[in-house]
Length: 227
Image (cartoon, rainbow, N blue to C red; front, side, top):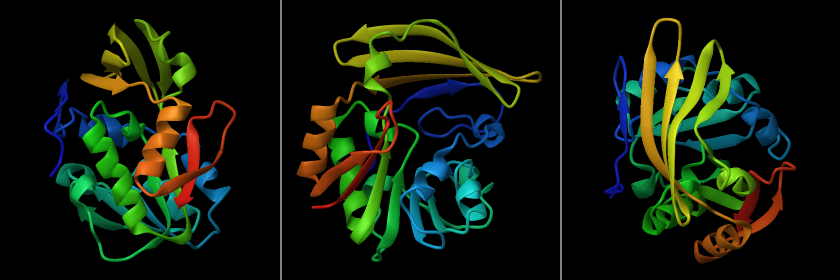
């Protein structure tokens, strides 16, 4: 299936259907995601990582001792993944015929601006989570959504991120992000939808999942399980 909505990107190297620059994401480090997973999933467990990219989180999870299956629809992204099983596929269509101790939907994919796609993402999560297993979902912090504005957006691994423009349209934010390294500049134009507490609970319930608790004070990381 996949979504009819596509984002765009510029800059050197290959880009995915969603405008992500492979080389940019290859350079970005993990940002504590593995530690959040480790707080609820026993070491050595099996993890299905949906939307792995080039392994930014995958490699940290593997180093923690997890058996990771990394899924992405970009062969160029998956070519950089090490220490994990890789599967090239759209998340929405994925059916591996097996279940995992945990399913990870990170990188704010749940904020995709299309209800049908979000429902398909969550259906894939439920389809692959074992009974009693964990589904970990990262969303954009709803408390800061309305205050998104042009300007510096942080720096990591020598790469400076700048929001070039933001256009708010109801629950949608249309964003152009520029990422600057010493030797390259990339941009990505994309749209995120505000997903508040009520909406995520409703979406989880519709997918046969239930919210267990939030895993961090900003309430960006949700822990869910099969209902």
